[in-house]
Length: 202
Image: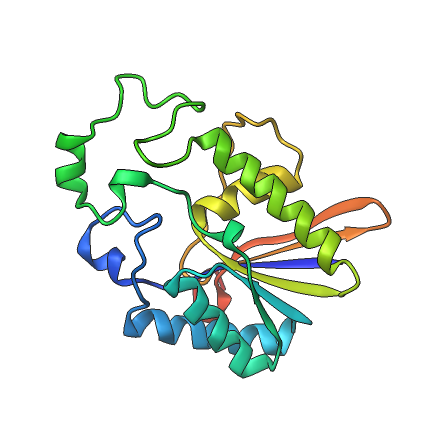
């Protein structure tokens, strides 16, 4: 079984300099173009059997573009949503830094931002959705997951069985693609953050 893990394209929040997280911004025109390029690349090189998507607009729109190109069914999974950043969602970074400053040594992993979730809760959610997808869709050869940078990083941590408070993170650019494989009880990382479809890293 292969997991084709894909981040959404550029969203309007990227242009507004605000905290995104659970704020539900749509794709920009560039984001739609990135998603179309990703979909063409995926259809040609790694066509999925099914698509599982976060319901947030930027991810769902990216998934719908992939569906149009590949003809796959889409299933929504709320656990694929981005980090719940509570009161920071949609707030400008400048205002947030004054109104909700980070503690001196950073926010402890067990401590949630007001109305949000902690880093540990995000990691637990990543563990839960990873196991759920493997359990529910294990009969497929390749499952495409369309999600968000923060959740994707924690999901890769979970795939690699890194500690809950692992200091390792995995960056994902706009429509970046990761390919993870499970074969004969061996876990393989085929590639990470592939953006060849955007002319990056060729």
